[in-house]
Length: 322
Image (cartoon, rainbow, N blue to C red; front, side, top):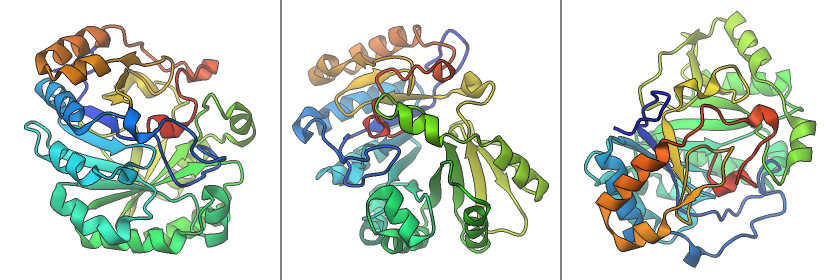
C-alpha cells in the first residue's frame, strides 16, 4: 500500500489522458485550449505500465480525466485497459458530458462504473455563458442515458460569486426526482486565473449551513471516496456534496495521487510542479515504476498551501482535471 510520512494511504489515482478540451469554461479555459498536441501525451503502453504499478501498490480506484478525456481517439481502449487491470476495482471518469448521450452505454460495457459531469447551471443561457457552449440540453440527455446505462452519476457545479438562491432552488427541484449526486465545488486558484479567482471565489460554508437547516444529513464516505462532504435528504432522489478545499483539515484525509497526460506524477493538485516519470514508463518496467512511486511519496507535503496563494504547476484545471 502506498503510504506517505503522515500516515495517509492512497487508494485512488486520478489519471489525466489529455489536456485538450473543446469547452471554454470561465474558470478553466476561457480562451480555449492552446496547449501540447496529442502526440506529447502518454501512449497506451505507457498507461498500461503506470496502471500495473499503481495497482500493485494497492490502488483500487482510477478516475480518467483531462481536459476532456473522450477527445482521445483511443479512449475506449484506455477505459478497457483500466477496467481489466488486476486490482483496479472501480473506474470513473470526468467529462463535460457532450458525448455522453451517444456513448454512455458503450462506456459502461467497456468497464466504466461512475461518471462525473460538469453542469454549472440548469439555465441554458447561463450554462452557455459559463462554458462557451450552448449544449445544456444535450448534456442533460446524456445524464439520462448514463442513468439508464446503470452508471453512478455525479454532477459537478463550481461555486461562483453570482451563485444565487434561485439557482440553488432550481438544482434542488431537479434533485427531487433525479438520482444523481450534485457536488458544489469551491473555485480554486490557478496560475492563469488569479484575478478571476479573487473576484469570483465563494466559500461553501454558508451553503453547508443552509443545507443542514433544510434537513440534509451527512453520509459516511467510502475508503476510496474523493474529498466531498456528501449529504442525503429523505425527500430527494438525489444527493448533494460539497468540496471545500479552503476548509480546515481538507488535506488530512487525502487518499489520491495524480498523473498528468505528459506522464508527470503530481503528489498534489497544487503546491508542486510534478515529477517526470515518462522515461520510466517508456521502458515498460513495472517494478522500476513501483520503486519510483514509493520514493516519491516520501516527499509529499501535509497540505496544498492554497491558503498561501501557491498553485504549483497548475496553470489551469484542464492540466490535471481538478
